[in-house]
Image 1: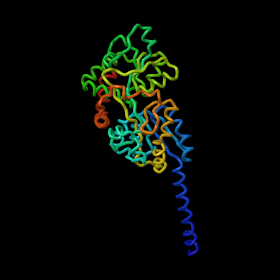
Image 2 (image 1 turned 135 degrees about the horizontal axis):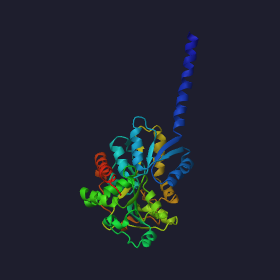
Image 3 (image 1 turned 120 degrees about the vertical axis):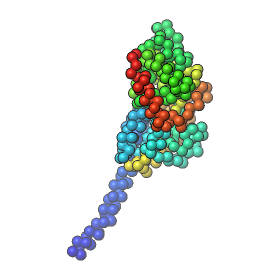
Length: 341
């Protein structure tokens, strides 16, 4: 009996070391919920591995889909970090306890206006404005003018010529919805949305897809983030990018630590790395032309210049609340989407 006890005691340190080794092995990977363009998501892994030796696995989901996934997995998180996507869902995730605020070492290097806008809820990763992405060739063939205002999109002459993202799945779509509500007031905005709806050819799941439709000539007008339109224009599509005269909303793309992240140590290393100028420069190389949050990160020359755009005073706290988002998206889904086109 004494010998068996002695053998068991000798095994305890070995088993403990095995558990430590297992935990350490787990920290050699970070699981990322990635919401920007796929090319940017794909470029992160090799660069992060080279910088840290840690493997990166990602799933690409738009902002609305990402929020739904985090809610579904709340009791057993599968992701460690949420990278990118519009800020409203990041703020909602924070308010619902799905993410936690982590203050990175580079916090004071982040643009002050972005930090002040969101407070200590999520980390600003980049910013960009909504715009019109237009194919002039399609309009010219139909002898139609380029729209200059939001209200121009209600003109029946544009029937079947407009695309925008679905606010149920796309953070871009929700930003458009919230922008119009803030410009016109809710009832007037929904009256305008009903008229625009009659001209919509397609609501897309992702925020950048409308620009691809416009680039191919399937539609003439895409409503989306302007930087995505610039990317498609640089790829050779015949597109023109500009901003409605009434003003536009904008995003503060997010970076969030998932609450209960299974690989928390690796997640924090990824967050710290993702905010360096070297890591943020990957975006432009992958064709994503948002203005990055770190003041030391060079701004790509083709990025839309926010200083020259009429930006609305976007209320991130209000439109990043669960109740407001659910109510506005629910109203659009019930009152606008089912109407005939």
